[in-house]
Image 1 (cartoon, protein in one colour):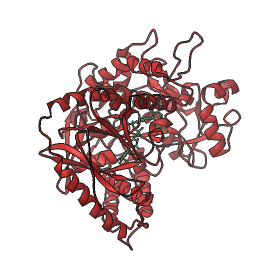
Image 2: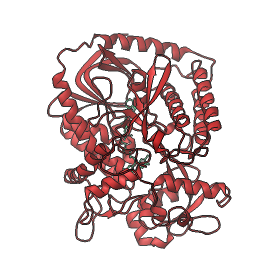
Image 3: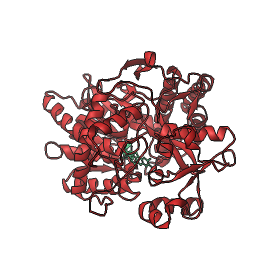
Image 4: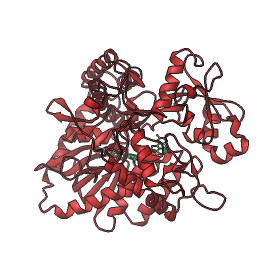
Length: 562
Ligand SMILES: Cc1cc2nc3c(=O)[nH]c(=O)nc-3n(C[C@H](O)[C@H](O)[C@H](O)COP(=O)(O)OP(=O)(O)OC[C@H]3O[C@@H](n4cnc5c(N)ncnc54)[C@H](O)[C@@H]3O)c2cc1C
């Protein structure tokens, strides 16, 4: 079979908000292609509910937004990068409003803003509880309007480097099963988070961290991978997200004794403490025997009244009706924490550049880092739009500096990958992808979850490494070429196993408790040894770990209470 090589100046991998916004920035200057394993409107950005932060209020300021973000991050965020996020936020929101996003409004016609966890002011702009849906449709329309080239339902299988810089990638076309080479002077990874490494996650099934695994494999380091956010309020059983906006609008958390227990954990902020604190509070109540059926607590919205629930939280009501048979106007919602967001990701500088020339990362895939050890709700949608623009500009500058470019190796790499796939497809008799994936998810849920300790983490690492060995003998179960989703699930699993290993190594190495990372055996924050980012680099067959400095400067590092 002939292997063709396509050519573009820049390939953006991922058509969520981060990828689209980056490509839009580049559209009038360069030949840009966007590649996505699903139709762009099925990217996880579409599922964002609660909103996007910007200091639009009269009493609010970018400094207050920056402070809340840094404190929320348990002081691990890089303060120079948080400054860009907070300063640029109003511009990013207004730009999207002008493009057509139908934000909810106040009575006098301004963009409405609701209170969110860890924020000093109502700062979260929203479109009911379907903010991501609105933002993604608007941004996608803008990308279409600019005539950008889309490769939809193409799965990126590897990155290619030559002469120490990126020169393209290989990708599998789902409709045909063929692997092709793509030569490019720059590649931007905007592949979203890796939530599906966990069994219980609010993330779409496609959030398998492919970009992080691809970057790791060609020598670009990952950063702060042990910081995984668990969202406090996910529907019991299915783990579908119940937005923080539900608490922002006035929802209460109640245990089986009928207590509004957050007064013990965050007396000032109560239900609107940051997510790490609320998730731990819920887990503690359940572990102390004060949960319902030893598993969950209640999120009670009844005091909001029918009108407010229907106007502000219509999607949440639908989710409860369809997936739990509960009407939140009449009954409380059973909830428990589940994996939600990946604070860690591909290590970049403030322009999105990785340590491999020509390789950039943006959005949830990247770790710049603006969220540090714990992300505040509403800051992630914001990161995609603010840094999509920043990274787009940086990529354009980089391309100007590329004088020579050697795309010849791309075709060979595609050929080699295709050979590997043929062998994989025909292999029979080993473990199934589903079995390995289920064990990985359960291991991560139980041993690398909200609460961690060394013996559990060691057991998890041993299990993940065992699963990696079993994966070498995996059987895909289907050998057809067209739309072979069993093959895609297998390639995704390979990526996730690599990430599960790094997350667990990071959690074991970080002998302190900070933000979302809580060690029962080291319950204190340890600024002396661990006010540091962790970096993970693949060197031949092992992962090198090291610690690097955090950019401080604007705000003094203090104890964190709410
Ligand atoms: C249920 C839910 C609700 C949320 N609500 C909010 C909220 O209210 N406010 C907020 O700030 N944040 C929220 N978040 C977080 C926020 O939505 C995400 O962090 C953000 O949208 C990520 O955008 P992204 O562009 O980085 O990635 P995504 O939108 O996840 O897009 C990833 C893209 O990468 C592509 N891709 C991945 N792997 C490959 C591959 N191998 N080959 C080709 N393409 C690939 C996918 O096809 C997709 O197009 C929420 C998250 C969830 C899960």
